[in-house]
Length: 413
Image 1: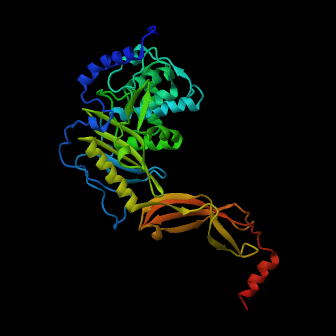
Image 2: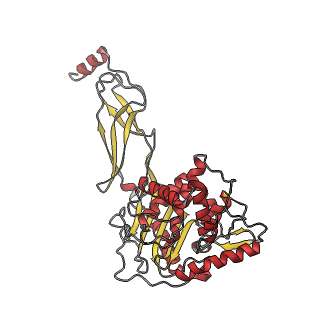
């Protein structure tokens, strides 16, 4: 790697801007570092995508019509339930939402021990020359993995993305293979990655549903990303850049995750927020401006908060029935649920949840505490919500000869 000796931070910054200029000219607008840099892109053509709510009941209002968005998804982060969607599987350009998978692969490398957060990463000339949005690293930078992740997520640094990819996999192409491997394992069927930063490429595409699904995996596996994505700005090498996420400044409940903007993608926002007892993930694609996309995110988060709730329809160990049987010495055994089942429901649906138990165990030998006796299935308006084994909550020995005789005699008395 060529390391210019004695190059100052000022010269490095000037050179980085010079190298970035051709890409910015070719892909205006590539990304904006602050809402003030908002530039309009053409609004989606054709009819507005029809919104639906897969888990709504007849009394739930329909989701908001967001005519300026190409597609959107509102997901519950805890349960994975889709609260609202419009064109969820439409394949679109992801722009810098690509960096969500870049971050995920890097966090996985940290988790498996091949990388550490404090490790210094060499910056190649290729990373230094990467166009578009940048955190302004150069070959003489002394930059750590943690700093690069901040630059990747807050500054949306394409240079940071390439530097991290080369450190993890040797080359950007090898890292892209890891990205597509993980996308396949997550079931992201509408996603193909061709680069690590999201700069336009004919083969690069994703969908609103895939972005939401990936975000949910990241929140489950690498929740520490929120410690970065919630920050309003980041300073590296005396250069302070505002977060690209305009929703952060608008809504205190939002603490992530990422935005993307190219001429091909429009203004895309992937936001997560804690609203009441729920963590929601809202993804909008193809907006004509940051203002419009921010308003769309807020409309989705408000819809989810007002009309849905997370609830445990079963709690492990909770008694739900008493199984009566002449095969047992006591004539009965208390029955409970083996697993806790948490679901997202319309707010007016919690009291309407019903359940049915199917007993399948042979009770003749008696039962022991924790033994599976059958299955309970929960439904709402005939729609299955989940199921769990049901278990005996106490020991219950088999009926003795005298108990059986007593039971027989009681029928004649």
